Length: 384
Image (cartoon, rainbow, N blue to C red; front, side, top):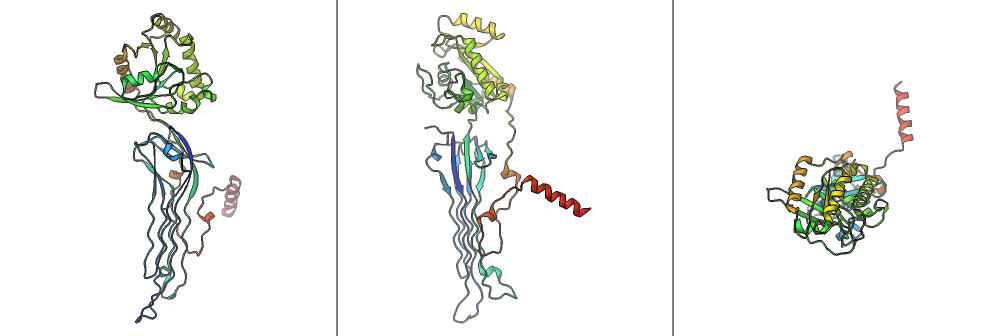
């Protein structure tokens, strides 16, 4: 099963309560306070891992909660800090806040991680509050509540090359011939139900990753077919390889098929439509393929590559041409999404001397713009 979007609830562990205790021994009747501090709650950490190809392992569990810290004890014994809950996600996962919709983090590299819900701080025991004037304190803290939120995880395949085209244009067949990937291949439309990745070695000490995107149809940008679900997987590719069948099963015109896909990409994302593109005619082993190629090049106004996955015609030339184009393009520079977690520099733990802490005390709420404007006006009047 392939899953590229899930919504889950994450909660950091609550902090352990501090202890109120006094030393009671035979020869130390007034030994003083010895209540230990509570342990910190565990954080919820998301880490990008190449061992996960999609988010299917998260679709069966909606709630992820870290353990709470252990309570403090007497004899100055501090509670144990809970272990962090680590959730592994595929490389290329975007984390969004469900309530506000903003991006919290974009995990693009293996091993990159982010604390998505911090655990609560453990409360101080009464030994923390002893002083020369307060020699028998009965103050202690309860553990702080851990952060919680609903998040949306959205995976975008990270590949160098994206194979696009109408169903049965030969994308899966091409991927199986140039890499060790084994996508499903059949003579009916929509054989590919999810993106397939394959690594291509050209024999020139270089390699690149190719993504086979499920077949697009007219209206894909509006949710028709499978294209709306998987168009986002080509957003991170550096080069689009547009496969056009020289002779379709429905006897449609190759030029119209090419224009259909180009229009769908433009409607989905004008930025994606400007991505470098290679046009490749497939199924050149058919009888009328040469005439179709000449007519297509005349309509397009430039030469196109022609291949046959059955006979192997043009395959090596195509791989070398893709490698050369990728070298010319260089690395894709994506704009960094505005991340709230990186914009707000919060301390690891928050402390306060209170017996109870309300959950609302740990939430970060943005003041309304009208309130900020009023405060600025009052400050200006006071300075005048």
